[in-house]
Image (cartoon, rainbow, N blue to C red; front, side, top):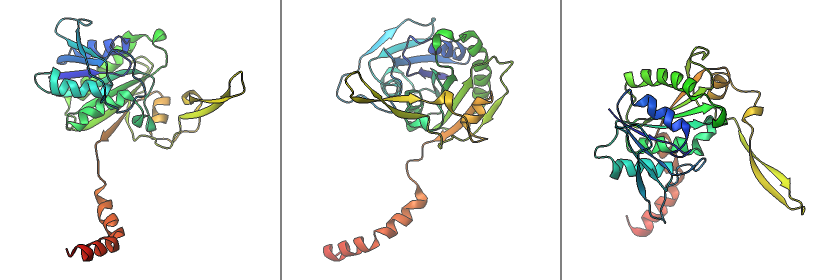
Length: 266
């Protein structure tokens, strides 16, 4: 099995090393990651600057790895199209420091790396940890829990184009309450702008993460399940068009189109 690994925290992040160490037990691992942190960069790709892919030897033998001056989406796209001789069987993105829940899906570089695989009809897994400071994370503990999750996922077949968004509580595998497969809670507004005054009286705005202050959460969704000590998994598919709405929207423009047909004698 060919496993491609990326992240948005940069190739030197300990969460990435933890992921690679675990995935080596399950297949042939390739690493293509940004050369520095690219958090909250969403699904952007680099259009107006050249991309450089620099081979590295940061990992154990048998792991081919590159760092690039681009985004997580760049990493996966470049790996699939150029760097790997054959496309990966599955893509893992992470382990991100800080959870990615609900609306975070649209902002996160971690999620975007996995979703780029989905665009290529390759199954993918985005993995995040509910802790906010790598300096105080026991990654040996994280590795033990992550190993058990990966073992189950790779023993089964994730559909092509499907992304699994996984969030792990920062706890031991013994104290973890289990796994809950849950929908994303899109109703939670985690990030909000707050206004601050500088010494000259000018107002500027800072984006504040209110994760720690969230109190009332909907049961049965990702935010609440993670808070209760469960590993959460949310399957996300790439559905570009809402087919049910096509017919309805066509009806909106019937009169407009009829006029055009008469004009152009269609």
